[in-house]
Image 1: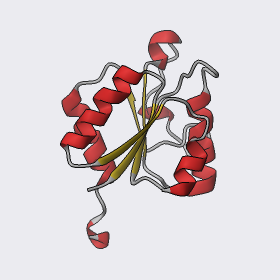
Image 2 (image 1 turned 30 degrees about the vertical axis):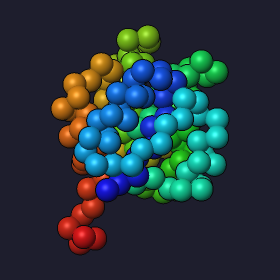
Image 3 (image 1 turned 90 degrees about the horizontal axis):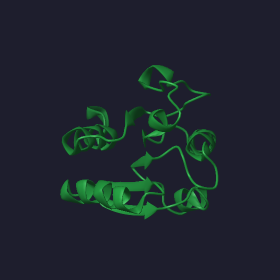
Image 4 (image 1 turned 120 degrees about the vertical axis):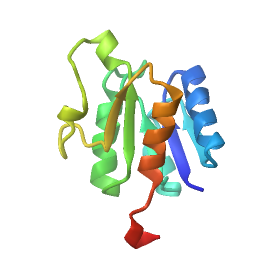
Length: 132
């Protein structure tokens, strides 16, 4: 069982992601704002994180949080799951992932099928064979 932290301001969507994670046997915590997320990770580092981009207090808060997480916690697996391309059609995708600008493990757009979501979370929490 892995511990997954979900940071998304859409409570209904966060609940759906939480249900997917719990059905796969994972423990889940949900935050609906980026405020306090770093402290939460400091208290208990998750095995993986699902992170939105846009929050009411800051439309790029998820990008900023991902950068802060990388600086402080290294290679924490982060799935950026967002509708940013619907709001701002800039075409963000996995091609934009890089260590400084978009330091996440994987990028998915909302809406996402629950099967794809489950598959990506399973990949994030899977440990390399050498660690098992």
